[in-house]
Image: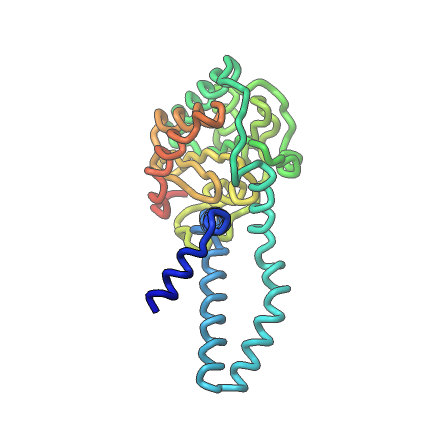
Amino acid sequence: MFMQIKDIVMSITIWDLIDMAVIAYVFYKLFMLIRETRAEQLIKGILVLVIATWASGFFKLYTVNWLLRNTMTVGVIALLIVFQPELRRALEFLGRGGIIGKPLNEILDQEAKELIDEITTAVQILAKNKVGALIVLEQETGIGEFIETGTVIDGKVTSQLLTTIFTPNTSLHDGAVIIRDKKLASAGCLLPLTENPNLSKELGTRHRAGLGISEASDAIAIIVSEETGVLSMARAGRLSRYLDVKTLKEILINQYKPQEHKYRGILKWRVKNGQDNRQGD
């Protein structure tokens, strides 16, 4: 037995190690994509079916095994339909170079600094006065279909304009503001609501819409609770709550930095992640 194991180990080449490393990395990235999403629960269900199919065959439960095997066959087609949002997100992730990453030549220019200052100033005012708000920053994945649902503004982003848009009892108050190319593209926009079953039922439409757009694209959604003034951020299908303005500013600065300088900010942001599912609107 020992000699067989030794022979196997000795037969492993550098290409075998590279092959295993690539597969492990791909599975890790897939796990990170589906973690804390609807797909995670579905995959758990699939694993239960696979184990049940194996067990029914092992214990010679032929009828049960036949039903499970046929269910698994038909289930492949069903999975393509059920997992459509997750598959789209994974393909967009690959299209953005998310597996390997790509260097960016842009630097944090004056225009980006002004944008971040205006957003954080507006958010601070809105949170202090407990005025509900939903601000979406488009990234590499285009969200033009959602921009078209609102009122086109195509103007410079200022804190005064943002606070005015979200003033209660105005026509654009309940929708989302979408920022594209450092300009306020549209206001009063309708966003897709998340179907995440793990999200607290106490969270309202703003949080669900912010999380929904982050699941459908790589956009960043900033949410201000109307009930509590709590500041939250949705990104990559995850909701981080109870942020302060300083942390928000660091995240946005990191977002507009070249790729090689982003990782420290991402790690810091994830420390605060997982504080979701608390009371809010």
